[in-house]
Amino acid sequence: MLLDSFRDDSLPSGTHSVLFLSIFMVVLLVAAGVFLFTVIKSLLAWTSHPYPEPGIHHCSCRLVGKRVQVGTPNDPRIGTTYYATFQFIDGSRQEFWIDKSLFLRLREGDQGTLLFKGSLCKQFLIRRTFIA
Image (cartoon, rainbow, N blue to C red; front, side, top):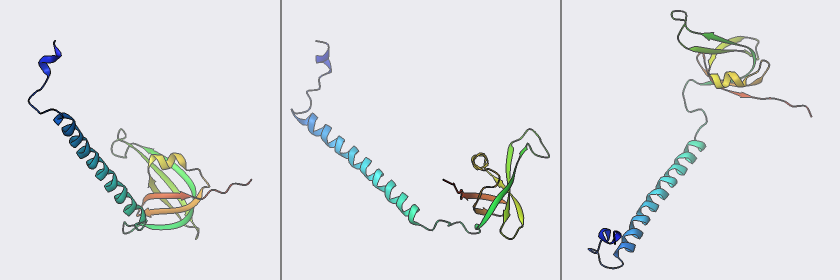
């Protein structure tokens, strides 16, 4: 028969199942090790200080404006930049660069905590109040 030519009789009987089981166990142990490493690394990152980057400031503020700049002053074909202007408790205002996903989520009048470094908005934690 055609399949008989592919039989490997060079190994003793039962060796195939032991070999398969050994390889299966090695693969299983490697997968379990990678999983445990990932879980432990994630837990350590989650329990570490929430603002590890130096120079990040946070304060309460309100979003008072948003704008988009298409292109750059030197070359109008390059990129889109998103900006948001926040008003702080003392009444002062400052404009920050923000990423597109945050720009799309924000609405004028949103209040919350702004995390920023220089003129770059790292995160804005929105505090929305709902009236039932």
